[in-house]
Length: 92
Image 1 (cartoon, rainbow, N blue to C red):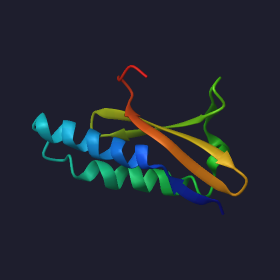
Image 2: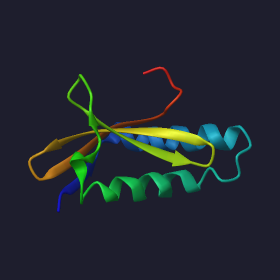
Image 3: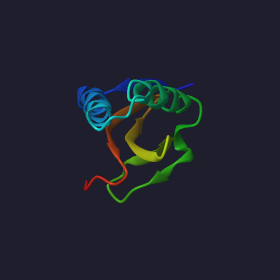
Image 4: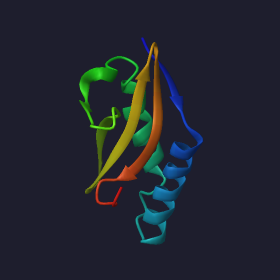
């Protein structure tokens, strides 16, 4: 089983994404963090199941209501390091 480490930037991304939903009237905004956390925790079992990008990061796609979010992470030894999280339509 892999350890999960979440960067400060990724935590800030979750706050930013929840706030955006809330500001746009989505009453389900507080649930986003829970959905992302559950998806990230699943990486502790199978972190290599997602595609590897040219930048040597991995990306997990997480569906939430009608949205899709991208969890960018790397695997280092026995640890999964979550780097950033963004909405799939954001220009990154």
